[in-house]
Length: 424
Image (cartoon, rainbow, N blue to C red; front, top):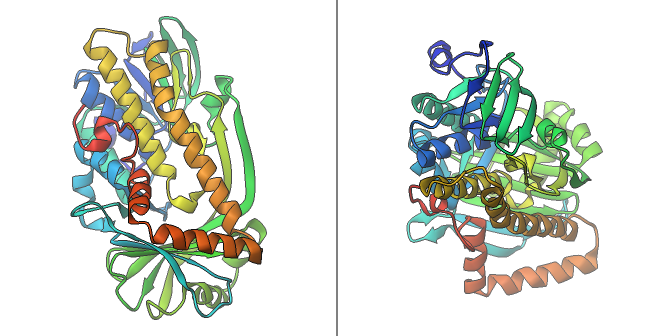
């Protein structure tokens, strides 16, 4: 999470303090979800709220993460309210249309079975593609401007009681707060320390992610080819460039990623097709194993899970980060509503409101992604016929397609204020 020297000074570099320090909220993890939550709480609880964010990655260069994320309309509204989206600017590419095909790897023709128009509201694209590093830098800059206490260390331990939580940092400091929020990723150490178990499994698949340059303009079209080994997604970036998310069985993904450049190029072209002309890979692919995880509970005493610490789903629908930002919007609103009427914003009742708001939606999205992956990632001709008929039916029902688009954009059901573009 990159900060320059000035930023490091503004972020209150980690030092062991004599005695116990105080904060309103401690957040473990300063990634996209953690910093978004910190900024949202500053917005909701007030500029005087003391928010401390621990992350050993603060100060490290951001160039290592070559991934890009689809930012749904609701998440973009949240980032706009928090003053972050304005900095992303021209690095964000709107998706004007989503096209779905279903074929075998060596098929020369890829019939289109389903298309989605790009607007969730007139003039508002349902999603944008943004490089993670650029979004992370925009969040970091906003956090520095907001005066967040950003500490270059992990949370090493914590003890909760009915009145608060005592957090021990890897910097040697001890902080007393009302709430500790774990935003420390899918392998959350704090989730384990809190004794919260997960329902989880691995898919035996891995995603290769990288950026390509291509000959012809994409016109903002995102294309998802469903292939027997897993989806192959071409996601538009500014200019004649695209982010590729290529899913294969894990052993095949590792083998492909280690091929000589010319052999990898051949395999890519076979899946990429000829619609956008020639294609050229930028850099080496990064490989990420795919799995499912759902925490048995999102909350504990003076403790909450947000983002990947609470849930991990298949990227087939591009919803991972967006689900985390929906967590951010729901938790920040529940806490703000309580604080404004003089209640304890970290009470069991407030945290339970957050859990009710998010857990069913998260579980439903996780199961939908799991089912889609199992339905499409196979060699069965019978299943292929069934799913292609289903896609064709959906394609002929504009109201149903609009429902799916709004839900994927984070605008279905009871929508938190930040996702509606409203201040807390």
